[in-house]
Image (cartoon, rainbow, N blue to C red; front, side, top):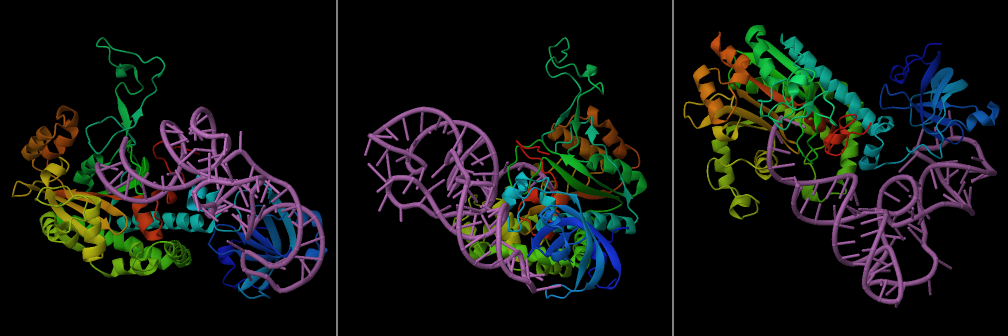
Length: 477
RNA sequence: GCUUCCUUAGCUCAGCCGGUUAGAGCAUCUGACUGUUAAUCAGAGGGUCCAAGGUUCAAGUCCUUGAGGGAGCGCCA
């Protein structure tokens, strides 16, 4: 008999029919009631066992974590707490789970403990909800761009360019590390390596996306990204997923509109399609925050927070305006910031961004037109010659979720900027070619996928929104 | 990389000013109960107190070093 998924049984449409269920036991109460979960949704389905007519050896094998198959009549529940239940006629154990050894118990576990057993944490309510929503976010992103005629571009994961400057890179090599070939100068002879040159894992697909955008019009990448930075925070990973749209004939305002529309679209999609999981995560977050002091708690429950972001325009202001606000704000004057803002040109620290987002505006903020010397070489220089057409979108609790810019399309200006920032022109000839042949205004941004999933699920540590997190000192599973 | 806190039973944690046999809840096991909702009730088992070194008559408790983890910062998405 073909199995029916729990999500398709809960609405009660199939009451009175004989169905088969397969899933994993969450709890077995009273020698009689199995809470069965099959991952199709957060809810369990209650399987009622006729314990008086079931062999004791079978009953003993129905333990937390075991995989079972249950066949029986779907009936209206005789007890409170659920609408339907399965009156089991036959139960088969598909896979035992030794209760003395199985690490998950029907109780709250700490996220830190579950991180150590990431191979089993999918079986908890929290991680089930997180990874269903993670899928939903990815799907909504593809749908958003597809609806707008974007082409999904697969930028390379192995890159031969080390000039992107977005961060420390992981080397890719098939050379024998115990016996590395050397050239006449005594350096590593990459001519003998797999690709005949030094290669790395990508830190960004942006430059490749620009090439495609200047032909296809509008493209986006969505792939893994690797940064070998020694970052130890709740919002950094060594391997993460990034979405990088790139649009021809677009300026910075178009870029901001696109990013804001996309973020709102995705949040609305999750609010509309993942209510049950969101409700659970909202309660989880509320419980977690009960242990925190009042001033560290989020002002809104999870769903209200998302709804607020969907319904309100993000605050847009320039770096210069932000500096003025920060210079005159209380924590700056009272010396409560670790880094006091004195002059235009200072790089904003987390504490400043958090003040703007969480205290001053209390909503997502888009900062634009940063000083050129704290931003990347490819950003378009403004007429003032001091600032570039950059934008960062800052979210409460997460910080920078999007970083983007209008690109410098003027060949001479771009070359000048590359010289200033010591980017080797020869290696970047292919990038510069786009400015030589039919260059045009264009813009794009990078969205940190996990940071968005963090914001939507309310998970405070980024390591809990990716199945198998990679970070310094850890590549388990 | 820096700052700071933590590491005691399978899990979550208590353990006072250094003092006798290291505790609780949950989980597990045994039994009872049988329409439960993290079921309940009774009982039992379960410890290299992260590791190494040191101070002391005496260390889970103090000191040093190391390992692992959390939070914050930097780098960023």
